[in-house]
Image (cartoon, rainbow, N blue to C red; front, side, top):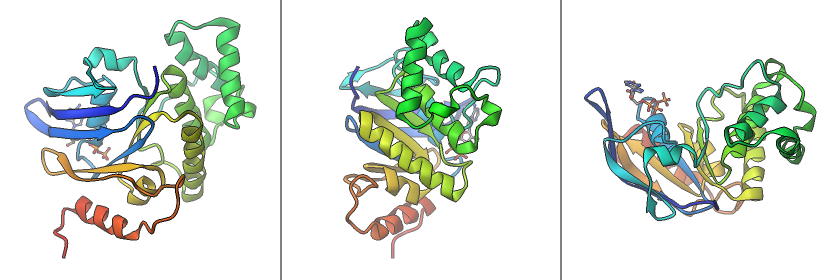
Length: 249
Ligand SMILES: Nc1ncnc2c1ncn2[C@@H]1O[C@H](COP(=O)(O)OP(=O)(O)OP(=O)(O)O)[C@@H](O)[C@H]1O
């Protein structure tokens, strides 16, 4: 598979009769990074679970490269990093990476080689034989992203990957992620509640708002870490206003 473009049409979902998503429409082009912003509890993780094929929407369509997909199909088509990524504590970093390949039916020296090459490519070669408890927060996140990418690297779904990191580690991890994106050009959906983080990494941003949530603001062609230039401050203000649900003066 190559990086797909992604479109959602009228995706709605309720938990036990309680509507959370109300007709969400959005799109992201192949190889671009979409930021999904929203306040806590607005339904960002729910939306990502729908994209990952872990939750079945009540109505609506999720299209990959122009084709409507079933929830089951989507399960194998994305690398998903949940909010609290759980590296298996009884496997080393290398073992955690090869797990993603085992799920794809790849085992043995070939799989091991691929995982080791990936670690080397993204500056984690020295971590191969460490146990998860020996990793810093930033390293753990990198390994979790690489594991997801080994499973399906053309569509990455990242749920608040920076939330547990301190400011400096966050910045390093952002740069690392931008480097990974420049290398493969996957389509990425990045959930965050941090406007600056979204502006640093995303080509396009949507803000979820309302109860149940829908897209209340959408902005494309953003200046990112990869294409610096324009002053992001006016946009930052606009996104914050949408997030807070206030009228613009
Ligand atoms: N499995 C579930 N059963 C019932 N309600 C749920 C379930 N998961 C989430 N919710 C509710 O759905 C709403 C949206 O939750 P969700 O986790 O998608 O929001 P979020 O925007 O990702 O929040 P946060 O930024 O705090 O992670 C919340 O009100 C939450 O309590």
